[in-house]
Length: 237
Image (cartoon, rainbow, N blue to C red; front, side, top):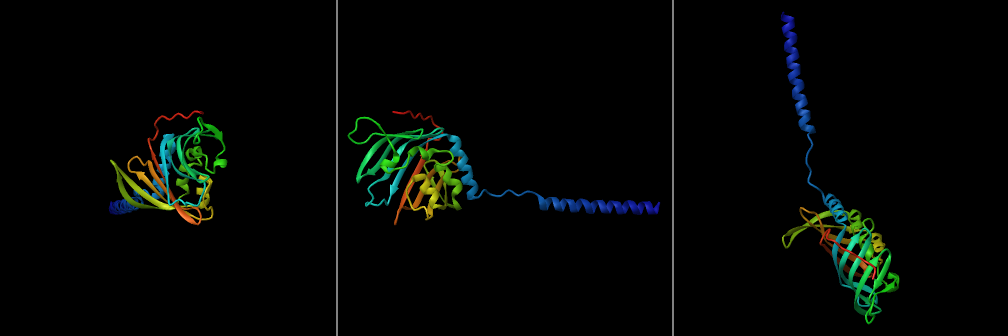
């Protein structure tokens, strides 16, 4: 009986040691919850914006060069992503004259109502020296496409916009990404970008891009997005 008892005791001690070791391994291998990174939040905001399908947009430019004869000063309107379309008013400098231009962009076509013209006329954005505003709402290559291209994103300051807390995220954008979207700027130079993301919903509220839009000067365009998912209808004039 003594050998049997000794064997049982040895087995019991071994089992205890084994359980202790397994318990230690389990504690060491237990998954940890890491806080989302700035890149994680941009990816989340990207999906929220695409899922919305429509937004209200306000764009404004600052430090724009007076010597340029054609560029966008500001814009306000509504856009959809399927299909990419825009209806609103663009304030632009054309041939040295600033004007508010009612605009509709849909299916690759652009209609504008120029000063002293009673109705919208179909035109080519290249003829006006401005980008097609509908491209801003393209779910792949539009404004939302800048988020995953943001390099070295970092959390910035938090601010309050009414009832919302907005988390700032800073980073840089390749010049080519900016010029492909807006058709202006130095494609070889990086642009600074600051996003404002609404906490909890992670909607993109603001996008501020600064850089050589009209080299050698440095200018800034700020986009504000609201009214996520509200019905928008864009029809040809």
